[in-house]
Length: 327
Image (cartoon, rainbow, N blue to C red; front, side, top):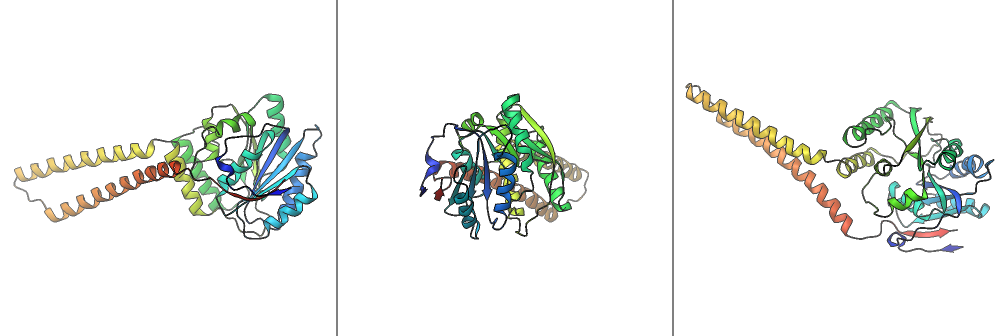
């Protein structure tokens, strides 16, 4: 069945679990590799020895290549456990995952990327931890990466910042491949956040988390990664502003330091005048203007980030629009 959904993000209804698990796969310019991804997930999870029933939900985040046509072929070949959804435009990786989670009908919900850098072979091990060990959240922790030095260094820096500001238990290598229960999903959607970081929300929930280590593989596709430095920087800012008081405290602390240095400089100038020494006025004024002006602009910028996020939250626009779905 093919239907058009115009505003699904405004509904608060979440499906009652009717399957053991759902694997959500965000798609963005993954033409040519989706069949390979599908077969890997199917062989590792859908055809499992436990007899657990699963489904695969693909969410196309407004790709302008042949990804949607490839997804339609997969769905037509396996309509009993594959569902596909396409955004009207690119709303971002975060919302493509959140849309899949909202639509999932599984007792446990997985998120895995379409490039197969994360091994689908771990799905059953993670699901066993949920079903038999009562874990509500299971993450696949990257302990090694078969990637460039640039990606390794920037990843360490990014997750190091998260550990320092908000979540000291966050894995040093981070994670993108994880599983959580429908109960956790219901909590996340009770107050859905905009401009947020899903992994941080999972740690914020407070549920015990089981970690399974693995080595992240290199990209096997010729498609260029769309995870740009600009997107990484925005996500870093979202985490800093959404899960930490550090930016505001930095402004307060910085203001106190500048005020203290100004007071010391003033006392030094008065002492120099009392001793008959000269004080250079031009360089002093220029230095103070540059320091205070730069700090004020930075503080206004940080406050503006908070104000913009508050404005974005109260607009009540749909988080995403599903233009087409095949179920």
